[in-house]
Image (cartoon, rainbow, N blue to C red; front, side):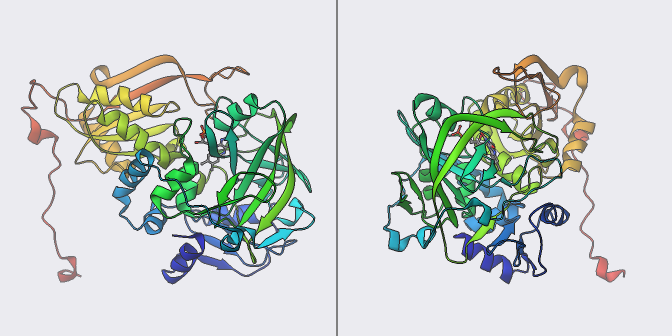
Length: 442
Ligand SMILES: Cc1cc2nc3c(=O)[nH]c(=O)nc-3n(C[C@H](O)[C@H](O)[C@H](O)COP(=O)(O)O)c2cc1C
C-alpha cells in the first residue's frame, strides 16, 4: 500500500488526526506528536514551510497490519518471507515516478520542515531519512540515518560504525553518492530497518513485501523508490563535524561524535509533498527498530526448538528486550531458545522465554509467567561482558570499539520434572472462568 493510500485508509477508519492550526516545527511540533503517540497525525499548516508534515504512521502494529493487509500475529512471518525471498524492484521512467514531479531549484534544505525536538538539540533533524548508497563490492544498501541540517545544502549524518553505509564509505576514496528518501510507504520503511547480509538489497525485500517500483536519480546512478515524497541527491564526504546533541531511541542523550558531512546537489519531490517527521524514542521509532529484528530472532530460535512467535517489547526501547514464545518439547528448550535469541539480534540485552499460552504482547501476562513459572536459582541465565548495543547508556562505551554489557535471560516456561514433560502441569495452568454475558446483570 502506498503512503497516500495508507493516509486515505487511516482517514476513513478515523485513525488519522488532522491538525489545521499553524504549528512550528521548531520546538512546538514535537511535544504535540509526543502527546498523541500511537496515532498518525497530519499537520496541514506548517509554520515556515509550504509542505505538510505527517508523523506516527508507524506507531502501532495495527498500522503495519493495515498497510500489509495481514493480521498482527502474521507480521513476523510476512517479514521473514520477504527477507528470505527478495524480489528485484521494477525500474520505471521519470514520468511514472511521483518523487521526481518537482525539481527544487536551487536545492534548499531550509524549505523542508525538519523538526527541532528539544531546546538543547544541535539543530533541526531529519529523522525518517533513508539513505541509499552503492557498496563497491556488494551493491545497493539502504538504511536509516538521522541527519542534522547544517545549512541549505549540507547535512551531518549519524552513520553507525561497521554497518552498510559506513563500510561503503570506508571503501570509497572520494565522495560516496547518496540518495536520501523521506516520506515512504510503511513496507519500505520496514525493509530499510532490516539488516540483511551484504549483497541483499533492502528495496528488493520491500518489493517482496508489496509492489515497490524504483527510478534512477537525476544526478547519480542510484535507484530510489518512485513513491518517495522527497529525494535528496548528494554525496557523503569524508569531512566530519560534531553531530549532536540528540535524544535517541532510549529517550536519553546520545554521545556527540564526529560524523560525516553530506553535500546535497539536487532535491526532487512530489507536488504537494508530505514530510515524514519521526519522533526519536517514541512508538514509531521503537516499532521500526524492533519489528524487523523479530524475524531474525524467530529464525535463530526456530533452528534449535519450535518457536511460535517473537515480540521485541516497547518497554525495552524496542531494541534491548524480547519475549520469545516456544512450543516446549524438551526440558532444555527454554535455555536453548534464550541462547539462540541473542544470536538472532546482537543488540538484545534481556530475553524472557514463555509458553504458547502466554500473550507475548501483554506485559502483565509475561510478568505472570515469570511470577508463576520461574525460579531465579534454576531458570536465570547471565552472561558477563558481551558485545552489546551502542544505545544502552548503562553499557561500557569505548570510542572506536564495540560497546559491551552483561546479558540476561529468564526461562519462564513451565518447568519439566521428567524428560518428557511436567507431572504437575495443571498447577501451572491458569484456571479461566466460564464466559459470562454481563449484559444480563447490568
Ligand atoms: C527510525 C530509525 C532510525 C535509525 N537511525 C539510525 C542512524 O541515525 N544511524 C545509523 O547508522 N543507523 C540508524 N538506524 C539503524 C539502521 O537503519 C539499521 O541498523 C539498519 O538495519 C542498518 O542496516 P545495514 O547494516 O544494512 O546498514 C535507525 C533505524 C531506525 C528504524
